[in-house]
Image: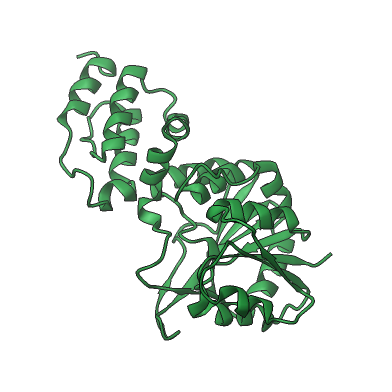
Length: 308
């Protein structure tokens, strides 16, 4: 058994694929398995992948297109290591990434999922910026992690930043293939129920910035709500158990429309609720959604919470 598995889903990724795989083979930690799933590419991805001759590399050529999350499930089922690091085809690992993964999780037994910071690179692989993790404490317990997913959307930002204990992935179950975009958000929410999540401040990934990127962290909460409204509603409801149902229904409908709320003095629980709405990155940043202030929240609060 290797110390860590790397899961690399591929679809028409020829442009940066060799650089991506070579970044894994060049790791200072050499005891790994690299599991690559080509999902029916029509470019030269398969030729690039089958040219690698390394016993640590397993290439799976899917006979039909499974989609991103189906491809990930296929690869996860093959992973045999206690840790799994996800990697996107356009990105690359810093040389010490896997060694740091192994050492970090050995020192933090309560952590089931770690999110690293990144160096941003352009199409020429030149470093053009950085993507830090949060400013808060490094480790968030399960409840606080769940709140961060509600407030901030997909805090991982990208698959490549994530390393997870294999048993936690197994406990969470497979990626939901009914999702088109937000399947990672859904998975990480389920994973964080099994232990703590860590913001690791070391920059261990070279994350490529280009127009074809699928992941948009700021919009992931809204995408999750669109693709699984009942699951999203249940996730949000957990954060505000004391809010009256009629008011929560109004809050929830405005959230789905992207309408932020106006705070009402007199109810700490309500202020917490509307602060959540106003802080949600998807609500603040998604240009497809309205930015008007909803006075209806205040009127509903006066009736349902304050009794006025």
